[in-house]
Length: 401
Image 1 (cartoon, rainbow, N blue to C red):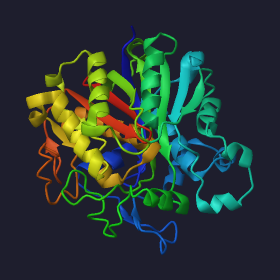
Image 2: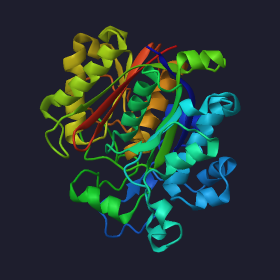
Image 3: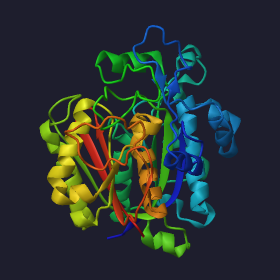
Image 4: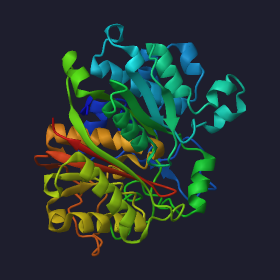
């Protein structure tokens, strides 16, 4: 069976318009969450978010022409920009690569119309296609493998990455370009999450999103996109590609229980981590770091902690855990991809990104959440978790190559 490795990465978040900016700001403990300026928030409970400024368009224009960019929504342009960065980073020469063995799979809940775009009727057919991003990526690079999107709420890009790995392991494809996008802040998204009391109403950007703390009260939305290049080890070696890490395990699990609340005591979270670990062939003691789903909601943080402790036993207290959502917000369908990139960088650099805004500890949550300051440590293997509405869970296991 083919081994799956990572040979390229691209990222846009409120902490930067490329992977290096994102990572450097992350480990410096910076936060990209601020007052919402994209819409008028006078009638909303939530007034802060992790917004991406328009400078990302410069990166998009580096890889895509005006007509291509105008045919899609702004969030889709973010995704296309990260795909361009990841492909450039991989140094793949598609002129000398079997393009029929390259697939594109993206996690997309919806195309992310910003409010102003709803009133523009240009190119609406393509703009409304959730698969427009994958289609345009395959078209630009002449890729003849399947190009499609998956929609599994906040685990969407995790499902895309895991599905891509499965296709490579099967021998069907040599490369899969996988990732996801988050829609921009809109009235509908803010009011919708407020209606189900999922988002924090704290107006202070420095304390609104504080995972695993005593006074956490909900997540904060983040904008962004991320793409990683999955490749078979044999194909990567044939072209002497730089290999960042190995994707040694992945698993999906549907809790089949509740649309918004996880299974009690994190039973579903435990199962999906255990299955991903089993597939990887690693032991629990091989895992040094967990990039947690860590939304800053009461139940998620409580149950994710319980799941980690139940699965890892005493080793849970030797793990480093952190939530990068504290710095960039919850980037929804892009979350798995952006957090996978942070996890891969953590393995490569030997640095655990911090959980910022960690103030008062919750006495019931007693793991090492890497509070406020990044930590240097050797990381041989790590897990990245994503748990979506509808009980759609995904865990990815990355290993140092």
